[in-house]
Image 1 (tube, rainbow, N blue to C red):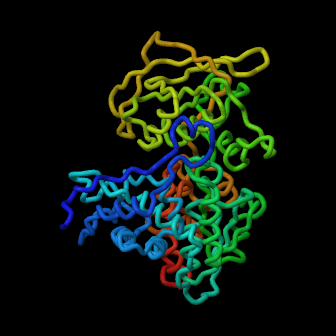
Image 2: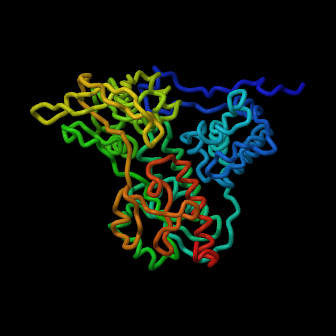
Image 3: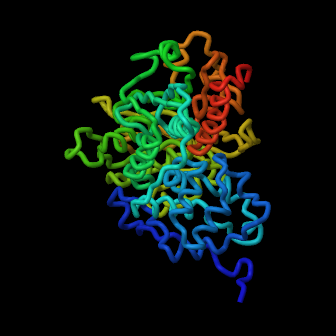
Length: 468
């Protein structure tokens, strides 16, 4: 008997219980079994005009990879993903599918959409764990060389795509290990670093070279790279922290989310003293912000033993974080202080933070972001006792590369000005994409920009797009 549309419910992914996961840094979702994956994949309608594809920045043939899961060809499914996505195991974990491919799923108009992200994760994990990671066909070597500044999601994607096209790509990464935000920003419990290493290894096997500890703008400049490379792609992200510039913000015990998460994730501070880098073991921590970085910071502090308050100036409806991350944070005991904003920090005689004075807010008219503007409620001040504050209100462009590259146009926020479709900048042969162009956005959006830029650079190198 043919199954009726919507007869099979969306399959829930098994995960660690909140009580257990609060005590470890192991991945929270445990992944689909073969049975769950095939059951979920069977929900796909295999639309003749799949709307889901329009929501995928890296252009995955979604019905095709899902159909292969139904047929039991799990390795083939992963290879179908890798035709356009070089980091499927990463994307299956951290991309906001609910706002992208799943948002356009036809089934989702009447029922819950197909769990496209979870199926992507399943296929990529199956290929990796069964030792069947095969390389795609690579074009004949063109002899052209491209320098990629930054080894995060955008840089890795562009380098891999160019390698498949036959060009020689070299990534210059400022840290001691590639991955960018995937290794320094996203916690182990959300994205295991072994997964990132495996994805990076795949990119290396395509022929991409990676030079670590190369801070472009210091150890070498873009102009020097242009002396030996035919083109340069800048993908340095938006890694400079943003603060509120309020009283007491320079007290000890107040971190930017960048520093806090880098210590814990990249430097493995949660394993101190086994690892060399320490991090504050807080008693009471406050995290400022409502995005994914704020959730990552709050959930990390919770695992390090703190009672955690998350302070956000709008309501839950306006929170930019993924619903799944908010839900997990609530399950793990994070206390949300919504419609609340810090106005100053209090400290002791030794210069350590002891309290966060906050103000209650109410929502007024929408601002430029489309969200209702928070308005202070006069006389509503109160103090939260703390010994650690983590500020996660956003990031901005690091000025190092633009400042050391004459003629490279930037906007008033310090982001590089680049064409949205080609990544071309004001400098001939220099392209840019990802957060250094758009400001802080998602991993998958940075990867999408890289794919578009890779095609433009390919045309440029072949002499087809000198005037892109």
